[in-house]
View (cartoon, rainbow, N blue to C red):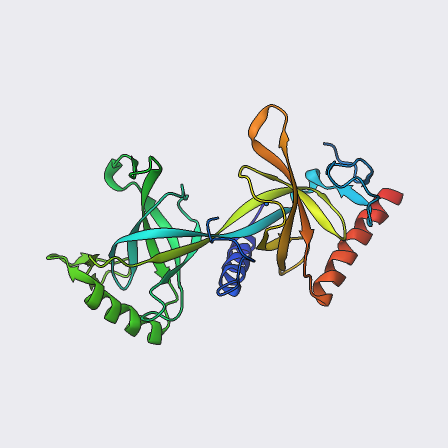
Length: 282
């Protein structure tokens, strides 16, 4: 069982990792967007388009509940905003408790705003669709750790890009706050992590289960959470292959190459792989 300390530490690791990826490029992507109890080397070729001999042995790790995260970037529309949070409209079906970064008008707010989803489809409002037929969602975001300089920039943005609502409302800290309806056509970007389960792993990459499709060769900021490590491995993951899982047309076995692991992170990965070898030999 996870105690409160473990849950808090994992939450803070996710927050630190998410904020560390601010400003990283997704290598040419358009910002729109990875049982048993026996651990042993996997010999089969799960990427048939790459039939050559593998450089590293692969290990089945499904039973170990190892997770990987990828950073996505999506355009959003701001509905209203205050110093404590915002209401936004997005095509992405987020969940309450998700942590995100919002980038608003770099000329006015130079740093992204870290936030947590606290509600969705307020007061039972039904999801609706845009002109192209995509489903839209209304969600509420509570800002976290807004620096004093960023707070000043946020207030200036609100006065320039919005009009105040007539009635202030109570923020979570019980203080009255003025909320502004955003009337300017402001382009905002939301960065958010999505978690995937790792099925197989090697020194060169991993196989994860994804419910979305990607172009092969694209690279995305990713993190890998290894057991007993205090910080995740951060790297750009290259989409090496995607194969539909039989009977699950929208789910894919996705091969990810560790594209640019730092030396320190390679050492952590080697240590983990060594533990798998030891368990296999035992």
